[in-house]
Image (tube, rainbow, N blue to C red; front, side, top):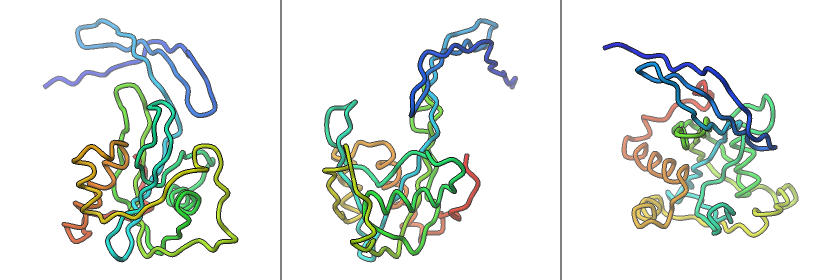
Length: 198
């Protein structure tokens, strides 16, 4: 079988903002022609499946303007601190969004969130041995985070919520299903938190 190398012949920037940039690339295709492909680039993200001793996963419900409603999600955030270790980013987001500290962190799964138009990846960690952030050390939430709802849901029920269409956020779907599969495998599929990123 012959392999084909898709080459970018040209790139035109369409938009540059604080979170993402948009480009139009001219890319070679099999057969010799070129096609225009719009690409959104961003720094990527991390998310956390926080599982307590009762096998309950921490979910947050947060407003997402592009879909004009609140979605059930995992604590998560952009990789927006230059040079910060991804595990530390995950622990920071867990503290900021769910007021929790994890005594154990493992790599659960890596996802390309929308590879048809974006280079975004999200690394999802499994956090266990949870304890609360002290009241005087909690993050002050603003904007969409100011009214987020935090709940703990049995992991099996969270899987059922996915199958009923109640959890539709892609990283939450991937993380919850991966956690359920990892638990069924006796946690043998987990990788070290410092595994090199994709």
